[in-house]
Amino acid sequence: MRLAKAWAAVEAEAARASKRRIADLFAAPDRAASFSHQVCGLLLDYSKTALDDAARSALLALAEAADVAGRRDAMFAGEKINSSEQRAVLHTALRDPSRPLTLDGEDVTATIRETHARMIEFAAAVRGSGFTGQGGPIRDVVNIGIGGSDLGPVMAARALAPYADGPRCHFVSNVDGADVADVMAGLDPATTLVIVASKSFTTIETMTNAATLRDWMAKAVTDPAAQFVAISSRPDRAAEFGIPASRVFGFGDYVGGRYSVWGPIGLSLMLAIGPEEFDAFRAGAAELDAHFRSAPLAENLPVLLALVGLWHHQGLGYPTRAVLPYEHRLGRLPAYLQQLEMESNGKRVTRDGTPLTRPSGPVVWGEPGTNGQHAFFQLLHQGTQVVLCEFMLAREGHEPHLAHHHRLLQANCLAQSEALMRGRSFATARAIAEKLGYDGEALNCQAAQRVFEGNRPSVTLLYDKLTPRTLGKILALYEHRVFVEGTILGINSFDQWGVELGKELATALGPVLAGEDAGADKDGSTLALAAWLRDQE
Ligand code: F6P
Image (tube, rainbow, N blue to C red; front, side, top):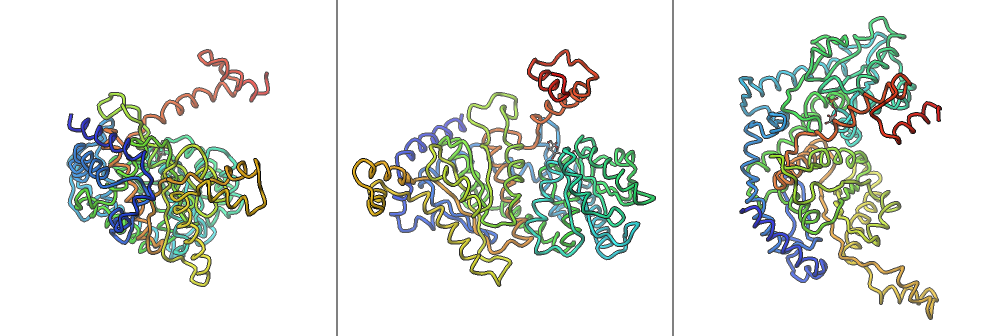
């Protein structure tokens, strides 16, 4: 009842807000300061939105009514908040195993510490040539995994490339043979280490790629399995594949795939940047966790970011949000956030199985700036749907000798949010067209093309420099944002039943495509497509 009332208040505020112009809110001299929040070295500016004091209070009341603080505490305490799988949610323990935590009789933090120490020992051996391939020191590492067993390490390895001083890391995820073929083409198996990263150790893409790489390696070395390690919560299955327990790094079922980069799934990253920088990455996330756990809702960065998200999607009805890092090395962040946000909150029922009465999480998409400006920003500025834009930008780049590039990058980022909000009136557009020499009917037509409605919302996240510690903070901020949004929507953000059906059907379609099964239960379209692929129209 309290929650329904709180939603109604937010919806009433949204109806009011749709009538005002964001730019007018800046008549209040302290607008930028009162609608931004700085914490842990991150500055979140959400002043370029239609939120005002009343709307923000209504959203905070919504967070109170949904007991965000209570659910958060339950998560950190190890309660089984992933109710459909009866699991605790403790990825936060991976980055701060100093807090004692017992789960079903297991000392979780002791296990995490022990695995982490083994990772460090192994990484040091590989990086220092204590562990070698059968043709000499390890020069290349291939991480095979998909979804949460790929997107975190691949995104972070690219983001932290300036810190890479270990073997080169490559990533194979797609079952499309092109992926593994392209990676194999440039490597020497005798000096390559393969990491099979799969929590379940059954994912068909990963197991198929692992078998292909094992065959490739077997042609070059006498003991291919010796250059394989596994990351999995199923050491029994890794052993069946030929990887002994001594080279399996495990994690408990209290860590979801898309939340797993902080532990063994991050081994490729640790190999690339070294244990110290990897620990800085974890420490950054732990710093943000400590803030999330202790700050009052009104000063809590993940809570504020979540409320801004809910305001635009569920409140104002904008169907998508764009994540726009003005940081080239965050090129895979949109893909990472797509899994984090859409696999977590793309649900149709609440935790108790009743249909949602509001939209679930939004479509998340994006691309680094400035490239996106020359692709889809046209729609952001003049298209008929409004998209919440989330900009990210560093004060400092990693290329001091190219500081003028960084200044241009910054100018572009700030210009885009300004343009989205400010727009360009018909009168101004008309004056521009006039200057270009248009008159009569052509003048109005030309002016109309040049009008920007403006009043388009954005948020901007600023940080100092993309260090391992900063990346850790940013990712933890987004993880908790997803959790808060899911909590308010009543969703279990930690299961992913929606990926099951396609997997089942793909397994059944293999024999149909091979011509071994007629596919009696298949529809006409699927059968016709399969026949065409078999070249048997
Ligand atoms: O796509 C579903 C999913 O279960 C993801 O949640 C997970 O990250 C991915 O598959 C990979 O799973 P695994 O690590 O078990 O191979």
